[in-house]
Length: 110
Image (cartoon, rainbow, N blue to C red; front, side):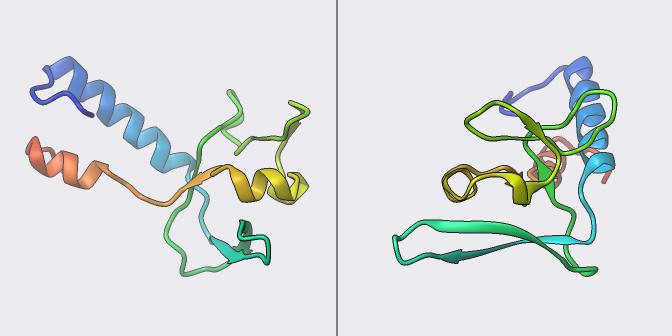
């Protein structure tokens, strides 16, 4: 999406990727956080039916389930199973959607 003048093919690939990301976004949960006494920001997921869709940085191929890994490299599907050190030091989720601004810039349908 950083290409200033994308070709028709690049536009199609980006649109396909955006459609996929939107289809696998987590709905009904919000990323909550609090700063601990040690200064680190701990994060956890909480139910919230009014929350905007939340994307994960990693997904399992074939199932499209959000995937979390700790320092032991074991695949986990539950964010609460990730250590405090990783929940507070790594962002597993994304809350922004750059596509609308990018789409407007290139006159794409919403």
